[in-house]
Image (cartoon, rainbow, N blue to C red; front, side, top):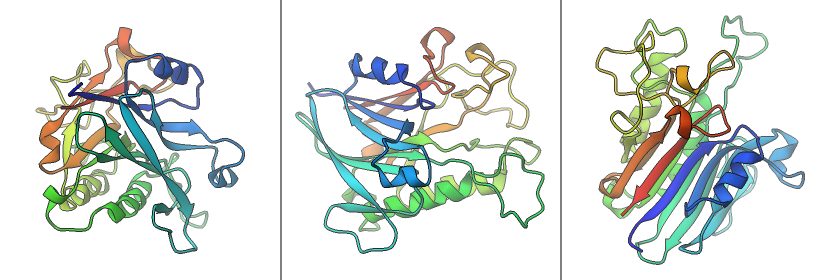
Length: 266
């Protein structure tokens, strides 16, 4: 077997997506909003987060143990800036070179209670930047060719949003994509034609946008999903082996408010 199949999926704390994944032909799942069991330290602060899950015998998955900030990390531990925003694992396929897979869940954060704001939900870019700081531990050279890192997840950002987009903080959103690029991580999608585009085109996007909707709100359904919040990045050079598309057709969507992001490595 010369192809590894991964999926990135925000499962919204639901059990049915887990059963679907366990019965699928995927090798690895990068999950967001995975419900934490009671014994995990993250549970003390938040009840859901990122996870890397092995789904087949075609790969070995060596999860990197996450620890909170406050003590020096051991040889194969990952210091996490905020509970649940990142999970990482060494993926060792039978037929391909090993790589590091990172699941990111950039959850929303509200402004300080003393801060006047009209943002009813908050902002996601701070958590995204915390996750980037955490995954930077896997980068030890300015030459991206020395790394094989795949990053995927729910960033809660709108790629390419224009200044008049009421659902985004465009400059702050773009800073996340710019920082990942500076670390040698290429944006690999999903982008049209690797996914169905929203019709009509959502307000606040450029005319030539290639965004594909990956999320629908409580007032929408898969057919009317409008915004892309889920993205995949890979080390420059390694990214040429990565193919990505959104399974966002209504019949393919699945039992979550986010669709599955299909990832193939060859």
